[in-house]
Image 1 (cartoon, rainbow, N blue to C red):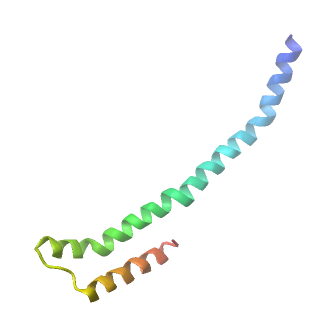
Image 2 (cartoon, rainbow, N blue to C red):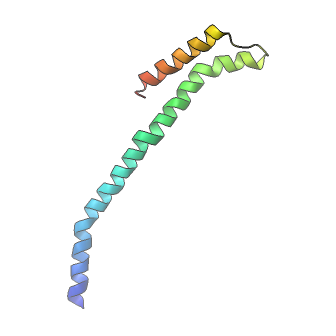
Image 3 (cartoon, rainbow, N blue to C red):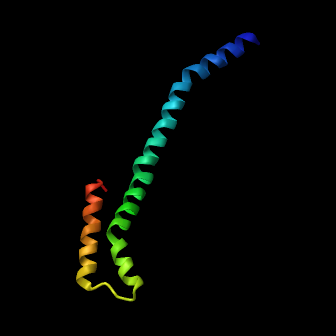
Length: 83
């Protein structure tokens, strides 16, 4: 019985680094493909549309040119952040 426990512990010790590596890899992939882009989009949205939202709060509509300019600024911001 003692031999069986030792064998199981050796197997666990050999597999532990792979388990840790897998957890780190999954964490990195989540950060890179989910967290980082959502934070960048949120920041770019607030940078771009904050002024427009202030104007619309006073009952004024943003002009079509202003909407196009905001869209271009938003896309440019996303490019700067690598999205």
